[in-house]
Length: 295
Image 1 (cartoon, rainbow, N blue to C red):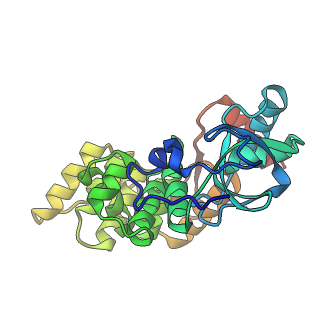
Image 2: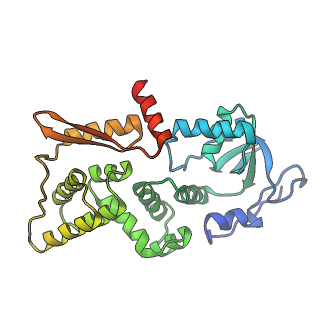
Image 3: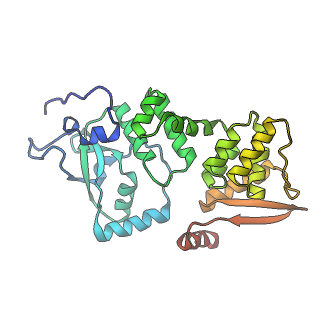
């Protein structure tokens, strides 16, 4: 097979590589059409070492697996060829895992050419385009694109279809204390809350405000007003019902999240008493959480 000369740079990023005929790789003496979908053995596909997402919801994988048993894999995965009948994932790890659960031995795939940097960029962009990512996961992917792919913020914005201000707002989230970042991942506070807290200068003040948001169910506008008051030299205290920040509560909250994969808030009321508030997205999600508690 003749060596295919890859273009320097990534142009529009993921779509530029996947839609460009110059990045196709064919086999079988040219019998396969460039850009066509081929069935390849799942056992010959290795994981993408640049996959930015390491956690896959078991229940959602099981649901996708059942769908694949009935309908097959609707959207082909994308791989690069590593040698004779050996492939490495570029995108589609969730579909691949679900196909294995479904007992499939082959999977439809686009076979492309990509070097390691292109692999990383494609995996990160594929990840960012997912609709279920939280703001911290997006921010971490942006950071990796900047640092590991040597992109500037303007180039990053072009890759992901966002303006520089939006990209910068996500990156600033990573400057917040770890407890607040965890709260964002768990859905305890929104991106709007976080953006307001970033405007405070000290981590202690940010943590104090974070606890007030949770305890008093403050709106984004409330938080913006408190931050403005703080900058003007006024107190940001709001009645907290006798609740103080306790790192042990943060630890227990994190443990609940790891177990249930749901936003959990512990509200203390003094003398060791309190409430556990578990958020769910749907009846199916509620039944999922119930099953985990009962197991």
